[in-house]
Image (tube, rainbow, N blue to C red; front, side, top):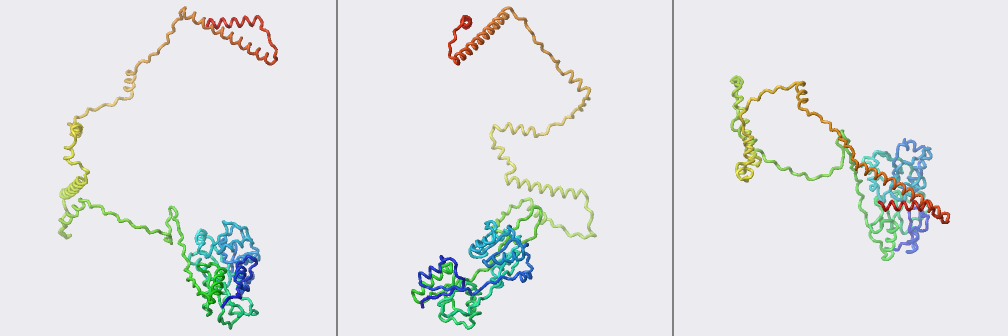
Length: 481
């Protein structure tokens, strides 16, 4: 049996780039789109009966576009402005992008997963102290609520819209070779519209494990179950199924998906506050192998004490026959016990190498014999001589002694010698030379100024007789030097 006509329980895609049109063109198949379910928004008066205050919830979980539309619809009807601080946890990227219709898309405020809510477990754990709101329909899957309950998250489930089976009595249901369902409510709506429905040779395709279970409960034979390992979407699974059945004339065996795992429990990590003891709660603990402690060797002193106790057990003495023990006997017994403990300690030290043996002292080099002899002499006791009483001097005596012992202060006077005749003549010569130098520098300065003036005017200046005399005097002075 070849597949030519397929009924899909979804609205018709708006864009022409949909993969359904490619399959119809390649394999010559006719697709008809008819939604089996319609969504009706809950009136605002019925929603108020649930007593949900939207302002108390800063984190919102959205599983479909219908949830997005109805959340913002009820918020506008209740005259509640949705704050920008709200965080949105979406179950798919398509739902996250659809939020742009109502709010500005911000990555820090909008989070999404690829397949299930378990992928958002880390983000939910970070916001565990806040309140979560889950807008859903009256007929919804309990997978999300079970996950939130298992992880002890503070959330409330609010019914924002209702799913109702649409009227499809005008359809000739037997004229189709295959029917494709996407939700368990779509499978139920088939029997609501056609209570006497019999499958026969008609093929049925299902998307998801919940829809597969609903079809089995209504005694339907499922030929196609998506997603599959090689076909994660319904369009890819349909293309594979139509290709194989039209080639061989027989539909391939369906690949039954495994049952979903129970929701994972998040174990929150709690850090202890400084200076405070917290109650025992659920925490993440990493088990590490415990290292066995090595038993330390028991000292011989304790063994000696235990032997002494076992060797001399105390005799049972009645109260009447007991006599007071004298103080001398008690002192002797304590001294014996102390001496036995001291002997035990010395033996331990010798064994451990803490006390130096006599053999070690003999093996010392001859250089260190003198040092050892000096140490022995220092340790030996010398005869004690009665020291004379030293009388401390009073303040007056100490001051007098200090004054006597102090040395007299000698003031050195500078001796000035009278200058000789030769030194005065040298000084006069220096003065004359310095004066001549000053005259020559002034003459040079005047010459340079006049040279600059001549360059500016570009007119030659004749040297006067005075200047010639000055220059001759300068030259004579330089020769004398």
